[in-house]
Length: 371
Ligand SMILES: NC(=O)c1ccc[n+]([C@@H]2O[C@H](COP(=O)([O-])OP(=O)(O)OC[C@H]3O[C@@H](n4cnc5c(N)ncnc54)[C@H](O)[C@@H]3O)[C@@H](O)[C@H]2O)c1
Ligand SMILES: [Zn+2]
Ligand SMILES: [Zn+2]
Image (tube, rainbow, N blue to C red; front, top):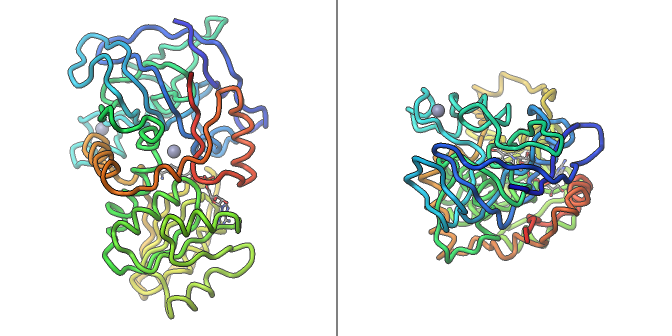
């Protein structure tokens, strides 16, 4: 069938996505055809576009999606036509050592397909108008109106949960929630700092509030991010363009933070997060730094102050366990998802959206709405 998608062909050259008509083959065994309703634009998409996160090209980009199952291939047992589903950008193989330990977010069996943009049989269902293969970005290739996805990368959800919010269950909500609950293991009364008030930082903030961290200091380089940060429950806001956040945090807390989250992907902000903690403090690295970024920190303070630096991929979640739980939670408790989505845009406008994110002009999450 004919579909329309945003294809990333030449990352890092400032050329943007090319919006193309593509040919999508039907689902094979254990795969489904999904009509996407919404796809969030995440900073990892921008980093792909700018060549900071490398994947094999060309691919249909986009990894934060929700939609409706149109057709299932042979062998599907967990989903059926008409189901509302969230797509996941990692699909645990269930066989590897990490999967066996409950760490499907770090699956070693599927990772090569993730990076090469292939489905789990090592092939693609997408071709361009010249008949050349186009890859499935992050398994779900979310910036296209339809895609074929392995069944295990689709989580059925209640039809009562709006699809415009459900798309964020594919990335920013579980990443933020899981970084607080699974990785940092926040305790009530922990003093928390969150660097970066984009989609990921705001979901991290909301999770910190809902898990009774206090105080919660939000830091962003743009002063315009303060009102949403306060609305989401930050007790304090620091603009690190205006003041040194490390000093200001010490002043507010009368000491150092228990946990600092870096939700930007900036080497300077990582260092500020590192110096925001002290004795027994943890830095949770959510932001994905450019592939060649390094840092320089004194090592002796690590044991003397018992500091930890913890990487965090996909909130250390188990997709099939945590995403349904988070949907249930979002249906009864206030994740403020209506405030998180501040704009809906069309596929044709996606390059303008990437530019707005690069200029740090996006508030919350902007989501692509398909017709
Ligand atoms: N670890 C994971 O599994 C995972 C998953 C998704 C996204 N990410 C990463 O999380 C990061 C954030 O993603 P997002 O979609 O929220 O991005 P975003 O662009 O929506 O938000 C980033 C925020 O950081 C602010 N900012 C930029 N530079 C800053 C600085 N030096 N100091 C303070 N604030 C600064 C911007 O103003 C913006 O508000 C990205 O690096 C993304 O790749 C990681
Ligand atoms: Zn993402
Ligand atoms: Zn695995």
